[in-house]
Length: 90
Length: 139
Image (cartoon, rainbow over the protein chains, first blue to last red):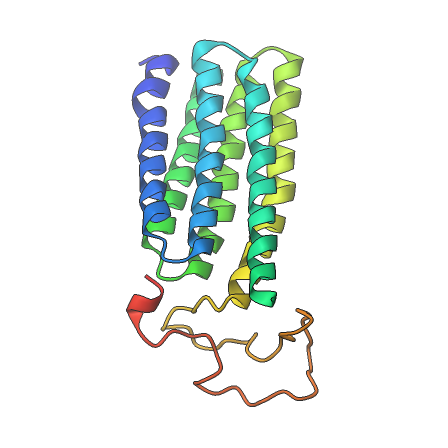
């Protein structure tokens, strides 16, 4: 079995199933903070999927997108937590 | 040789991500879900990026992969700390099997400061800690 088929038939399906499992938590909640960390985890898994796709399609430009996504995940979580904490304060 | 190394690293990485997503679905309360998410997902994505860094014989890809890994390792604990703190302030309940809520009464509710020995600290009772009474509150 070559490395390409291993990536196609084992690694990528596992990552796809992981995104689906996290998406169930994003819908279920039950609180806002649960949804925030679920969204953060989805973006982090997205970085992994982009990396595997970079390897498979031999397009190294796609790693730039992964850098931007890592930045957005961090900024999003920090902004959400700042506003959630402030909302309780008023 | 390199193929076997790549296969091992990518398998461990994908399984770590899978366990993180299983944990965020199955763990009983928010704080346990948070502790599962941050560490396992960072490890998994870091290992997948390591695979890309090994496979491409190009210095730009290696630099980008190391930069993303470094950035994730630096920022994800900060984000987890901030969201955990916001969750405790907004009164997210702890799992009902939690033994002790050591933060109860330690946070100043007006200034949002953590004090190790507050002046007017009331006794920790079953009423003022945040441990949930039933399983359904945190599910």
